[in-house]
Image (tube, rainbow over all chains, first blue to last red; front, side, top):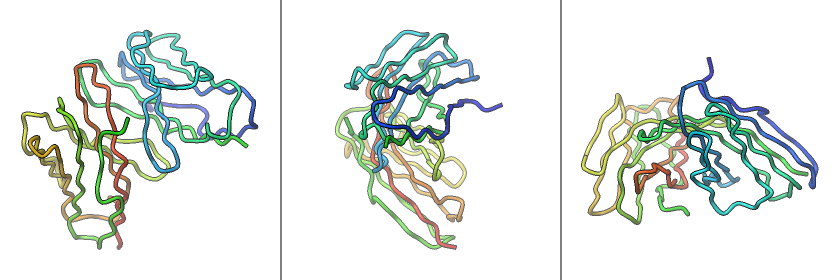
Length: 112
Length: 111
């Protein structure tokens, strides 16, 4: 009964490849997020979706494309992976109007 | 952009002692939250304090907020080895509840 789940947990791939990370939440929340945490532990918002609509789109290369098929899912597709994309990516969800966010366990992406 | 800053960056104390972490920010806020991140895990919400509140308690946690100084502190009393983690503050500035995060304090509790 995991609240926010992500797959895969680890992803090791070569530069130039395309990969996807999936996120699902079973909390009934209407808002989902993708964050990137770098090696210094800085946590940076990338995208946020509310009811399947994009509401936050920070300065992120357009190689990153989020897709929200429904309110419970927010997937992240990354094209032409670069070394600098190596990081831990976290999915989170919340209910709009309530500030607390619930995080997934993270996906550690390593680009070789 | 990073608007929250925690200090210290790292803190190592003996089990049973109290741990205090601070967070400073640069703008007016709606609320401020503290989260914990255990190694290799996602973040877990600990406590939220609204801009019109000055102090809040939850178990062994005590959070204070001084909006005039734009700062908050998180106090963990009677620390335990299981409190070893990174602690992050996050602020919200407007009604869309986008969180702006600090860089975190790494807390190590020595048994």
